[in-house]
Image (cartoon, rainbow, N blue to C red; front, side, top):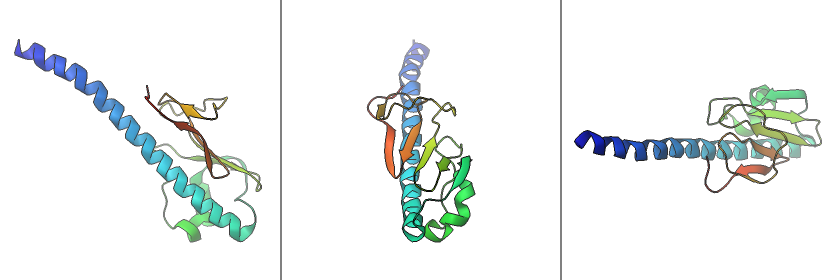
Length: 135
């Protein structure tokens, strides 16, 4: 009887704990993306363009460009994967590929409800973000 009650409590508590951990990772990722966007905006004010790259790169590649504006910054999202960045100098996109680590195109451009969904920033604006209950 006691083991059945413990099993029932564990069955309820463990999924909630896992969900809370993933929500925390999303929140950290959004905060880090906002910080990076601020650093990139400061760079753009001084150089009249965003840092240019020819293909998607991890934000670690921007260290020389952003060091004066941010010092040390998180290069990895809440799931320990690199934030990805692309820019032609006039516009930029930065993304975290979420729990699954895969690009999930096309981007929904708004609220998402799955931990696997990408979190995307375009020119300093978060255009795809988690909202509400996540699965």
